[in-house]
Amino acid sequence: MDKQKGRGRFVFLCLAPAVILFTVFMVIPTINVFRMSLYKWGGYSANQEFVGLDNFKKLFADPKFCQSFQNTILLIVIVTIITFAFALVFAAILSREKIKGQNFFRVIFYIPNILSVVVISAIFSAIYDPNNGMLNSLIALFREPGEVPTLWLGNQQLVIYSIAIALVWQAIGYYMVMYMASMASIPESIYESVNLDGAGRVKTFFSITIPLVWTNIRTTLTFFIISTINLSFLFVKAMTSGGPDGASEVILSYMYKQAYTNSSYGYGMAIGAVVFIFSFALSAIVNKVTKREPLEF
Image (cartoon, rainbow, N blue to C red; front, side, top):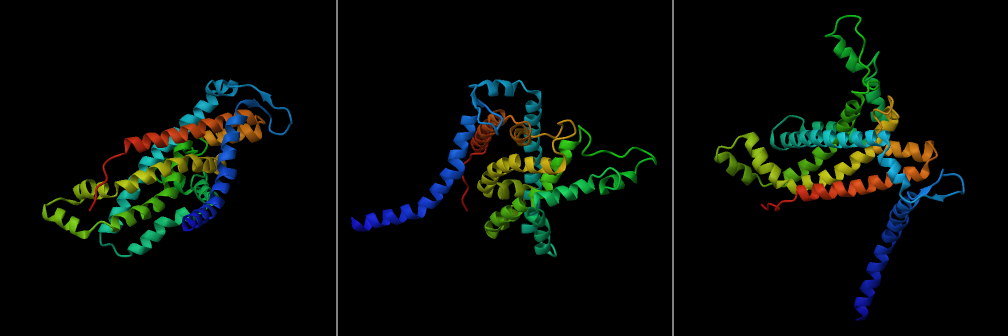
């Protein structure tokens, strides 16, 4: 009995710091977000007026919020599909094919992930520069002299896709390395059996590699969706600040502007509450849709 009590105390002491930190920095702030979303408050005064669900009613009638929400969903869809497609293909190539300098390519692909968002934003801002940027300089080779250069970050139709490219470039290497680790655990005998049956590289990739690393794909997919919501705010803040005319605004950048720039803290917290619910709902949907029986080898 004393031994069990001693073990229980030890487990409690080990878990207590993590539980306390999680409660102080996660649970309490989250509850406070929902609480403040019911108030009208500028963020700096002592006057807090309870308005109930008025902030949420205003929210869904706000065209700028709807635009930022659409941009967020667009980035999630585009960046997720492109990133995972390239990460899986590159991981399969570097894992299965005999290529000189494989370790060199692994390092090169992973470098963008260790760079800060500010550095990556500066790199792509320079690439997209309308006058001296590399992208317009390459396109100019195929244009007539005197044509107006493309404003990649100043065009309302192109700006969100320009940011999506930066997000993809930053994320591919990280997920490629994760998938390479999963693919390395697949026994070589399985691939040998498939080759004897006459399956080609493409069929082997879709019928063997993808199903055997599906658990890892499913886990990283949920994680990536949440991180895209967060990173999109950082890229927008560093590259465009939501411009031009709100065309690149995402849901978190709009929340930041409302809470800390426009002195509408309660309204900003209502947006934060929607982001919280949306993130968890989307994660639950993705987990449900991607659920399948795990394959063992």
